[in-house]
Length: 171
Image (cartoon, rainbow, N blue to C red; front, side):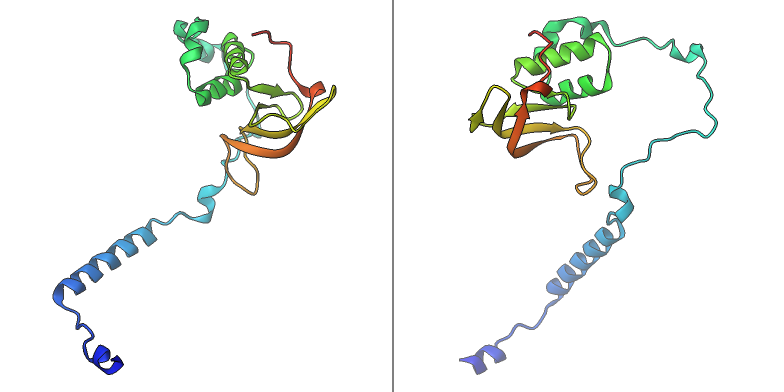
């Protein structure tokens, strides 16, 4: 059996060589465009050595579109859009509207970690001071190890202390 098998081995034909050549060319092309180690690093925040105040003329750009003044539009936004508005339009009416809609969707803001949490399941432990269980949270920064952020992550065995719960915003 094994002698016959060795004798019956295929001899490469032209189409096999073409396919091999094509695969090799594709591998070489992908190797040439392979991400480099520095591609995953966060961009550094620019900090000028000699800061100069920006002239007022540059602040004359119009604000957000009037459509963003309508509270009803926020219930149609995707959760990521609400997070974007919350973190990038700080101190505005739009931030307030985004936060209000996130609260309507059962997200809760943690004042210590400055991020949003949502119960993944009912808490395992509930007291007057805290609850403990599994939560989904919005990671707006990422970590040094993961080099990523702006996503939802799960936190198991998390203790949410009520003293850090933002509860001033009424929905």
